[in-house]
Image (cartoon, rainbow, N blue to C red; front, side, top):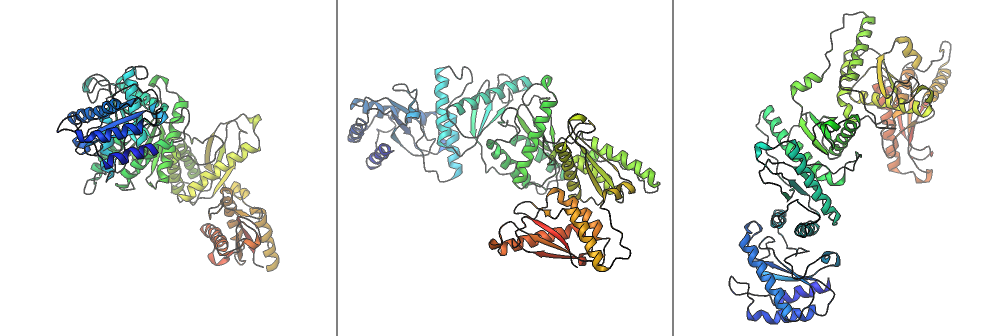
Length: 637
């Protein structure tokens, strides 16, 4: 670093000059050459690079500028050697790619940059940074540098020429580590000769280049696209900077169909490249964040009510497709959808897994869902209002079974009770059925994998939590029906599945807390009886997520049962007392406010279940009682 600073200082004070349109150094440059030579000779173990530049903007770069700047860089190298510099020296002409103006610089290379250098080679291992006045100019410079390096895939790792090009590419990318790049592979042939095999071969070549660059230490996100013979460029590989600020066309004034056509086109272009997933893993790699942000930017330019389909794909041929590949590809689509949600995307998105059925490689593709497709997905619910209750129950049972089967089973992640994003269409259909029969109580029954003899408490708890999670999702979507949840574990040997069916009045009453006989009791005795029943339901505490007003999953079920009991005691008030984590001496205004908000959350849930608001009292006590993250229900006696 010290040496490079000294070299640049010399060249700034006494810049080199040449005869007009020539590579021959002018006489007035010789003192500067001698001064640089004396300095270089004091560092005998280093390798140096002479970099030539020509006048002009990056987009004005051409072969003449490159050749002239290269000849001038070579003339400086030779002049230094004539002055006794014996170290290995490279020279290279960048033309006007960097927009630096006329000149030649001399730099010492780091040890890792100098590996494998050939004496007096027309080569570069580092890029002299230019001070760009805009992102657009820097992007133009990088693209010009890449344009100078002609890439051909043949013998990429063994041919000396291709190895040289690889190292040069790595130098460009490592000089600009914040940029994402697009690697486009092409195959021999004409446009009309393009086919799946050519697309796969060119995709594989692009991914091979990415791997080779990563092995050289490149950390940039490199997105790969195989275009086959679509562009008629032969067997080539090209690298481009991905522009994060690329504008999205204005869709205002377009018809609904025109908007969807434009959206599909933009999504197709943005997601044409592969995603560098770890083999057999679903976690979205950090290199895909640029794609996520681009898709988010596209979607933000269109109405948020547009429904979308997100489809995952994995490596392999159509013949190699199997259930495991389809499941992995679906989970990857869900991971991409989750990343979009974190970026603020609110569109309804259904996730699907196509496995390797289309031979598209490791990708995620998205498109809009048209009105006719949405209509086809919805349940056809007959009018059953005039039917007897028993017949309405049978009709609802049949419709619930259809709703849970229409889009395939709910595919839970192993040992998880988070409702998968891919089940959105299933839940929507179940919601339709529930809305058509709002007065009917239903049972949500969940099962886990395993044989009946291997059932255990852990499996029963997991299956119950999954049923409760589905219920919570349906409640959030507006379902008002009484829903009783059951977790069967693997007791029935049905595998991982969910069933929903009508719950008769007798079964519904059994699922509720047993009420004491109230006849003849005084007001105080009734209050104590209610206190005891509530304590048995909520098991002393209604629990919340840490640092949040969000209820834990089982707490919602407890409150539903509690509401049924409280409504049976209309003349008795109930206090919802909120608490926060911490010791009594740590209590403060923030903890009191959080605990009060938790108490209000409980009150709202109870009111939604039919408890009159005037029967409830909300209190926040912070951490004063050291009861932790919870709300307690206490009868006001």
